Length: 194
Ligand SMILES: *[C@@H]1O[C@H](CO)[C@@H](O)[C@H](O)[C@H]1NC(C)=O
Ligand SMILES: *[C@@H]1O[C@H](CO)[C@@H](O)[C@H](O)[C@H]1NC(C)=O
Ligand SMILES: *[C@@H]1O[C@H](CO)[C@@H](O)[C@H](O)[C@H]1NC(C)=O
Ligand SMILES: *[C@@H]1O[C@H](CO)[C@@H](O)[C@H](O)[C@H]1NC(C)=O
Image 1 (spheres, helix red, strand yellow):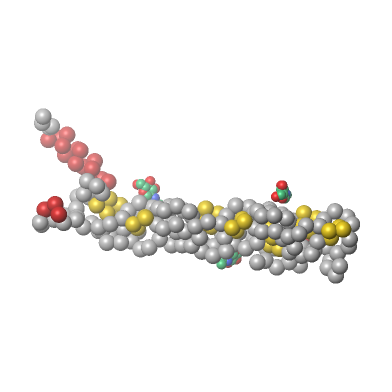
Image 2 (cartoon, rainbow, N blue to C red; image 1 turned 180 degrees about the vertical axis):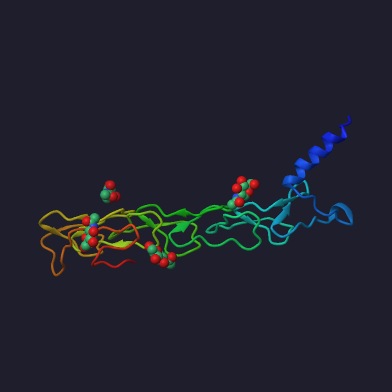
C-alpha cells in the first residue's frame, strides 16, 4: 500500500510538532538514543518532552519524582523539589503536593504522609506545619482534632492536656474567651504551638 507524498509530509509534520527525531546511533539498535536534557526517548525512540512529575537529567532516561517530592514543570533536568512543610505526597511521579487536612499537620518538608493532631492539640485549617495547643479551660481529646472546645461550667482542663475536662475550677490559669487558630496558622493567645 502506498500513500501520496502530501499525506506523508503532512503526517511527518504533525509528528515533528510534538516529537523531535533523535540522532540515529552509529552502531544501530544496541545504543540508546540521546536527546537534549529535559527530553527522553520514548518507547518508539523519539525524543519527548519530560512530563511534570518527572525529571530527565541526561536526555537518555526519565526519572519519577520520589514520594515526598513534586515537579509542576515539564522539561526539567534536576531532582524534584521536596514537598514543603504542611504538605505531603505518598505517590511517585506527581506534579503537586497534598495539603495536610484540617486536624492534621506535616512538620518537615519531604513528607510522604501527614500526622494527626494528638490529644491536647488541634489544627483548624488545611496545610498546617504545626499544631496549636489547647488553652486553659478547653479540651481536644483523641487524634485529628480540628478545634478546642470549651469545658462546661464547673469543669476545667490544663493547657495542652489531652485528658478532657475534670470537675472543679481551673487552678492557676486564666480561661480565654476563645481558643481559635487564625487562618495564617497563628495559634490562640496564651498557647504555644508544637
Ligand atoms: C506540560 O505539557 C502538557 C502536555 O503537553 C501540557 O498539557 C501542560 O500544560 C504542560 N504544563 C506546563 C506547566 O507547561
Ligand atoms: C470542632 O471539632 C469537632 C470534633 O472534631 C467537630 O465535630 C466540629 O465540627 C468542630 N467545629 C468547628 C467549628 O470546626
Ligand atoms: C479570639 O480572641 C482573640 C483575642 O484573644 C481575638 O483576637 C480573636 O479575634 C478572637 N477570635 C474569635 C473567633 O472570636
Ligand atoms: C510554617 O507555617 C508558617 C505559616 O503558618 C510559616 O510562617 C512558616 O515559615 C512555616 N514553617 C516551615 C518550616 O515551613
